[in-house]
Length: 166
Image (cartoon, rainbow, N blue to C red; front, side):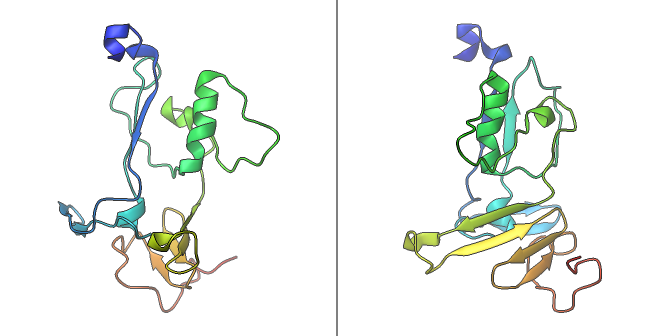
């Protein structure tokens, strides 16, 4: 439709998932068999694709592995359209428009996620976690080394100096 309207080349289209693939679905990857993680905060439930299409602005077949949070979508669209982000409220997101264009940008060092779960907005079944490219810490104190345990099978019991908070 965008091509038919003559605006495909200068229109930003973002495609992403929300909280992983269904638990009953498995995929074979170079890292092994990965079960879907919808409704849980494991890497299988939070590491979802984000595909940006904007021929006039994006270098073809480029890939960026920066951490992106859904709160970043609003400031990114505002930046892409030239709109101002409201100053009368706190905006947690940051624009990833530079990364879309192939520039360095202001990459996140970490992301935080809180999920209420299937019990509505109650603490029952709620989960939260914070992670960077290497380490993931859950609200219950379990910590994982994502570099060596991407499927989060074995929580760390003895933290190396590298994993200890400064």
